[in-house]
Length: 358
Image 1 (cartoon, rainbow, N blue to C red):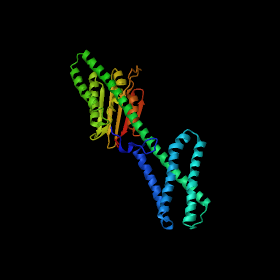
Image 2: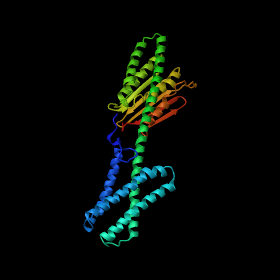
Image 3: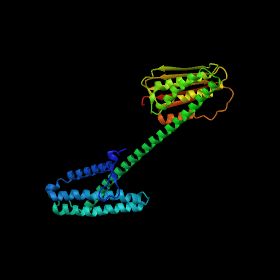
Image 4: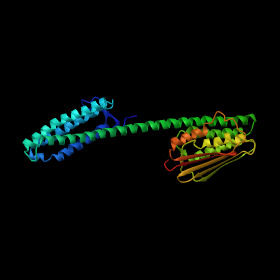
């Protein structure tokens, strides 16, 4: 992949390390603004002294500021301040400012005192004071610019790492869903083949349709809500075939899912959990009721199932609702809610997702 233009690295003459194009442009723009300010401020020198003195004054002042600024950024800062050698750092910064003051103040004293004449009281102390505080000001601005760029770059890198981590975790959690689902369905198919049931071919057909969805659609970031709901209906039909006692199983859909998108395989754990820990443990009169409500900006799903009064072994799965919580936190941070109610004879799960920003 080609590096974006602003992230490409270039190396200036006498520079010890390369910098990005963005860094170079920002710093160039800053010094152009500083130069423009001095050109405006010192323009009177063209008439009071001469064009030569005007150029020397502006170029000399900006050049000295550039030397001090980059001595601080690329030498004093990494060698002393970042290594917590504070006394040495502030000492070197002060020494560089004093060197600037000596050169600039002597030039100002000569320029205003002898070339232009006493247009204002040419006082060496006044020149030193003016140059000292102006140098601190420009040095502070350059340091603030440096820290701002570093902070922005760190935030960009952290955001990139966060996105990569999120994608890796989502892919890992989603990969856990597929084996879990296949394990349950193949158990169902195995039970039917043992009974030599005529329903086995229908199970194979529905399973092939669901596998197509899992293999070709679930790798996308989002899928059609219609496909996700259709997937649930197929799963419920496969589970319904499994039970000879025809438990009370229903899934109602209210609202219009057309045009809505959702992360793939996000609703399945709710149905899986209801069958695994509810209907399958109830020897008679087991039930499962699901309701999906779709509004223009939100998706709500409620799954309620019967519970057995006899505690059972949880099995090796147990990843359904746990993974669902993790995926919701990664995919819909601050845009979802998941509530679980575990009562004596009823287990209920309510999930709501804000679809407005998908």
